[in-house]
Image 1 (tube, one colour):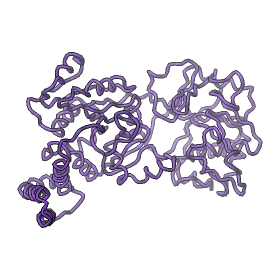
Image 2 (image 1 turned 90 degrees about the vertical axis):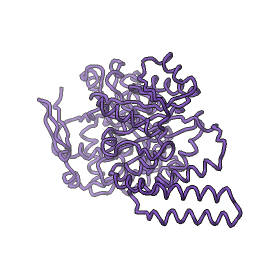
Image 3 (image 1 turned 45 degrees about the horizontal axis):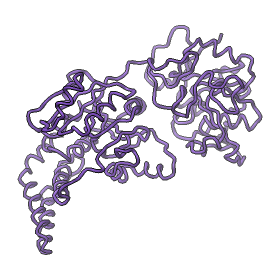
Length: 519
């Protein structure tokens, strides 16, 4: 029915091009020679149409051009889809075509600029372009509009808005709304919301999920799914373990589950053995601490060739699409060792208090985007996320190792994040993935003791941080000064606590410095 070309960025790694398909190459230099104005310094996001326009300039004789991304899948015969629009003379066919009023919170509206035209938002139109058909006349118009850098915008607002502004015909080939041909509603793709239909931005589909006949799906990953080991460390977890395990088993992305029990004294083991006999269980004869128990999970993953380890606290529930979203993020980004979801409270009505505190200082860009209701990044980087729910790549575990045995409970995740950064890997979270951490109602019997215990543990993590060059003796002396100051104020509890911290830090000085070097 048509000539088939593979538009390929020759700066990327080589791929095997199927027989009968003609390769067409582009690169940064060739796209720069078009003299268009991009919205960013990279092709993605937003400038995907530049390569199509370069191709059009070299092959200008076709009446129509179908542009199909590699991760689009049609469950029927492609000629049925194509021939369904042979008699339609539209200049642009795409999906999810909507006006500004229909989707006002979309991030890319404000990327649009049309030469000297002050076009109001009410006249702007967006589309979703993993697959689209565009006419020769439309491509010629876009080239003339873009050349010389007079106009710019994300292709999903630029293409439909410009074509509509100049009177060209645009049609949605499925879904619903004013741009759909009567009778074609929901025909070639389902559109229940922007991330719930068969054509969506995220999360990815895997082949066994692509089921409806004669439907377009995006994004579809045809490669083998990464193998994930979910590791849960339990200690007297009878109140939470069922909820935690049920959420993992109901996840859209299935994982192998390993539970490591730290000598629970309640009915946790009984629950695991009677209600979850299919789950792998390691029973420790004593409580070896959170980090050391998770290290057993790391070693199990290494020995059994898993691709990722999902660390899950016993009081955490994962949202159904969470794992799939994080895995998809790992395929989308590079050089990350740990990804985490948003940590919500157990009832899901608020952000977890500690998580919010960490990201407020560690990811200020996210806070700004949150306030402006313009979440614009798939992953936000930060220096630390607590280990209540981590997806860790096996490469990160090989490079960084396990948790440091200096930490029994608390502080081990701070230390691990410091080491991840030291090893040249990044840490981040996806605002599109969610987990629920049921700890907001937990009773802490002695707040003062808890405060000073955290100060001691975090002092070790701070002194051990390989990214810093801290004078150990000076740091301990500073805490002694705090102890003396407390004594002068007749605050005996603070005096004893600070003095005890200084004494303990001094007594483990050699061990801390040795472990800092071992990083």
